[in-house]
Amino acid sequence: MVTRPRINGGLGVRETRFGNISLLGKLIWHLLNSPGKLWVQMLHKKYMKNQLLVQIQNYSNSSSYCWKSIIRALQHLREGFMIRLGTGDVSIWYDKWLEFGRLASILPVVNISDTDMLVKDLWDDGQWNLESLSTVIPNDIRFGILAVPIPRDRNLKDCVKLKAIEKVKHLIWLIFHGCLPTNTLRFRRRLTDNQGCPRCQFVVEDTWHCIRDCRRAWEVWQELGFVGTTNFLGGNIVDWIIQQVDSDQGHLIAIDSRMAWGEDMKVTKETIQILWQRPPWDFVKINVDGSSLGNPSRIGAGGLIRASTGNFLVVFTIFAGVACNLLPELLAIAKGLKLAWDRGYCKIICHSDSKDALRLLSANQVGFHKYKALIFEIRELLRRDWTVRIEHTFREANFCADFMAKFATSCDNGLMIWDEPPQSLQQLLLADIMGISFPRIV
Image (cartoon, rainbow, N blue to C red; front, side, top):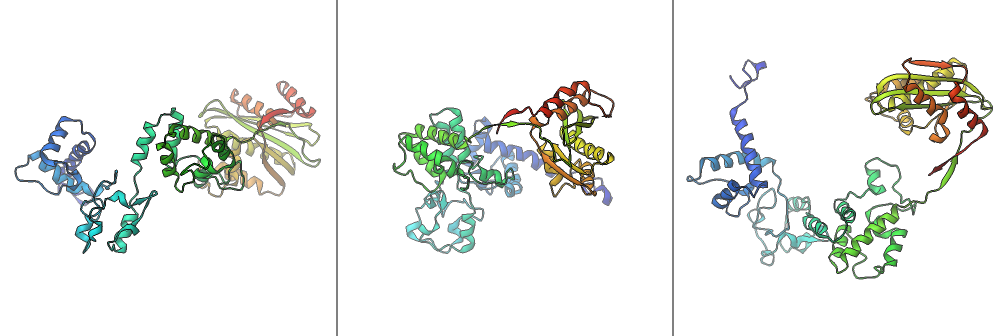
């Protein structure tokens, strides 16, 4: 009755047994992860005797009350433990390295030629090679073995001991963990829609390609004399790196990998001239922008409408309080379209320099976005009986809207509309009409 939930007529008191198990779990954690503590060393010497804690099943009657309690709690906590291989220096058959127990106690017979084999003997080029066994293994056990990840601990230690600067070690570490930010990885994480190498264009950019096979990376290796050497053409990136690092020129190999990665990441950039461009003769152009003094902070939105001749038609600003920097970008688009509709313009080109805002307007799933209402409002405006094109522009072609958005953050008047351009805006308007351009590196 005491531990029964209140909704069922009890007092809802938690069982003390579960609290004790939780506290004992902390002791078990220290036993596994704090070998330097005196009490841990004592229990290791007295009770564990070179055994793994998770493999201990029972205790003797002469054991201390503390040790008995730990083993009892271990029975409940063992389900949360996962056995992880280290160096692989354990017997395939007689050590418990699989979750379903020792293979010698499961299989009817172990071939005599396999009895001395260790787990690491089944590793080949970073993969499991069960074909080297003479013992017949059932499919369910075979699949269980193949599901066990092969550890990379030795590789990580080699990385730490490598005689190289930290950014080179960091590159090797990224390769070992499969975290090198290639376009293949970025595509998998939905950060890009292009897996191609920025240099080769038509080749998928994976780790191998970045470090060795890309045209620019290959030139680095060739210039330094490594192309054609023994084991230079390998099949597994981690094992290839380890083989090279273990060689006499290991530190040079690591540095060259860094150089190859750097060369592959160098994309040719050029400077282009950006200027405000007039719309077609029967269109008007809306330039909009949002501004935030922080994130979050005071926000303002601004924009202006101009004719195909470049002549000023109307300008607006909105002070919208305190929020993040995405809100004013959406507000500027919404207000610019509303103002154009109210003024009777039916052919519109709307330019914004916020890719995030434009991406939201074309996204399929925005039902749970915090600005859902504003996004749907803009979409409703776009569905009206008129011609509207919303496009991205660079900031250098959006200086007038940017100026008004910054001006809005210093105002407290909410919406403001000018039918004549403010004095402070006239020089920027004149620069756009004259076609003055600004350089941008792309």
